[in-house]
Image (spheres, rainbow, N blue to C red):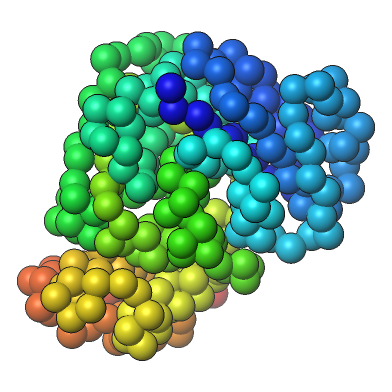
Length: 301
């Protein structure tokens, strides 16, 4: 049987965290261990976790951000696979069982992306049912570049030895660390995107890290910089695959930022990846972004 270490970083999400843990312990496939990393919470998280004290391992650290918290949790994990889950998200009862079946079916891939659905209230998830597990399998993550697969860091299942080989997540306080991590794992053997069933309910929370567009733009700029510096695996033979993946993430962020009035940072990313998008035939985007920027500048404050 595949053994899973569940790693849940949390920061001032006490009530959501308790809901999250209830879904972990409702799994039809039991985890090997559950590790909660409290990233310096001040809302009574530690006291609230006492109800689970005999079923979880709690690690406390000064606030250092989600990347550092995930890495800290992974440091002492014993499972064959690390299953990351954000503390404001929920698992469906069949999540771990589905991951285990797909991992065995596809011969122990280094990386698995869960399938998620967005929600604001848990009642929105009641109509979602369990389907027979199926997944799209690739030799490695970079081989999936044409498909546009996306997964947040809190929805990834990673072979522990592969995680250790790449030294985990970036620990600075920027978004897009999930994209960075997937690219860093880009040539590790085996990648599976879960197609069925839905495994994760992703809660839309106002004010969360993911809604900070400035952090997202800076995080994407880091991806571009690392790619141009040759810091991702695969060499020149996989350059087009890497840049296709990065450019796809950049396009959506640039359009969103321009609509929000963040013209300067968005324009920088647009220019930095112009040649990539030109090569990939993204003419509509290349034409639309400057028009959108000009229109936004003409709007009254």
